[in-house]
Amino acid sequence: MVGLGDLERDVMARLWDAGQPLTVRQVHERLSPERDLAYTTVMTVLDRLAKKGVVRQERADRAYRYAPTQTREEMTAALMLEALGATPDGAARDAALVHFVGRVGPEGAAALRAALDRTARGSLP
Amino acid sequence: MTALLLGALGLALSRFVPPALARARWTSREPRAAIVLWQAVTLASVLSAIGVVLAAPEEYVRARGAGPLGAEWILLGALAVAGFIVARLLAALVAVTGGSRRRRARHRMLVDLLDRAEQHGDVEGHLPAGSLRVLDGEVPFAYCLPGRSPRVVVSGGALRALTREELAAVLDHEHAHLRARHDLVLEAFAAVHRAVPRPLRSRTALDAVHLLLEMAADDAARRHHGDQPLRGALATMGGAVAAPPEAAGTGRDAERERLRRLDRLSPGAPRPSRAAGAAMCALAAAVLLLPTVALVLPWLLQARAGWPL
Ligand SMILES: [Zn+2]
Image (cartoon, rainbow over all chains, first blue to last red; front, side, top):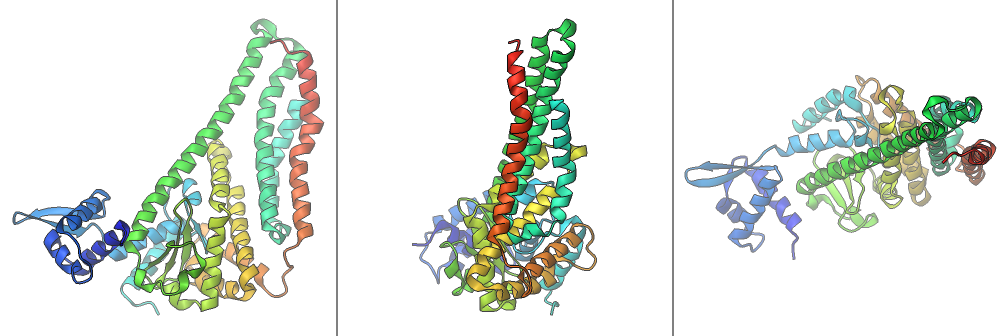
């Protein structure tokens, strides 16, 4: 039994790997080798992801296609900046997450962002 | 007189004690007791403020008479102001906890989607089942999302840069945050911070408690793994993200925090001590009890004798 969370993660991974918007059928095909899924299940999952704002639905050639709203790298970088306290909104953020090494603050965010960009391009040692 | 003394006490506890306490090194001998001391100091300063609001009008009326307004109305006004202070604190608590619940829920949703489950390997063993998440990226980092459905997040870079022992110590450190609900402690201080009028706000207590919570989690981890793996992990991870050379302000603070944590893990550093912990707890009790016994109780007895309502 695979949870809905795992399924959502796998669908996102297929969309990110594709690099272009996919139809429900295409997502279904790409998942089929590994798991036995109903077409409607894939549709439901894509719908949920769209409601969460991580997937965009677009209509082209009488078929709906789905694409991630951000690349995997962008989304990862945003989370990491938030985790390090580099988001600029008040004291509440300090209580939301607990981390192993420090906060960076808005001043350090730019430097960190640059470091993340370098990482994304694979040039960090 | 009571109002004046309580005012002086409140001022000392909110303005002068926090910077001194934040600078003090003896607090890191027993971080959990030091957090109790911070809680006592903060609570006592809030109670002093409420005490001033109640005692000042009462003492004024007793000394000078109520004048045309009537003692009842002056004292009711004082009660209303005290009620407002309490309401403001509660509102801040609701805002802070609500805000961090929402932020965590969204963060958790995204972390679940980005997870590289195939990289979990055998590192999950130390953590609550199903709580580990691995994110892409070479920058080594680790943090946790507290709450009813907690997550411990590490980067692929951390999995590669840390040794097995270092990684186990880091995961234990995060697990300690989750187990001891350090998030609740931090939320309470964040709420007080938010409730203080903006011009008087200071991050001193919040930052000091944050560092002490990190030390407390370090202590939990070093009990199982010793000092060395934690020190190694702090060196590796801090070097990579905590303080980019261009970072000013809080970036430097983060670096200072890391150095203080490294300091107390170094071979010659004083060990955590039960005596220091007991002394700090006694101090915490004194901060709350002494003003109550010496100032508030005598005033209450006196005020009750002349209470007009
Ligand atoms: Zn920590």
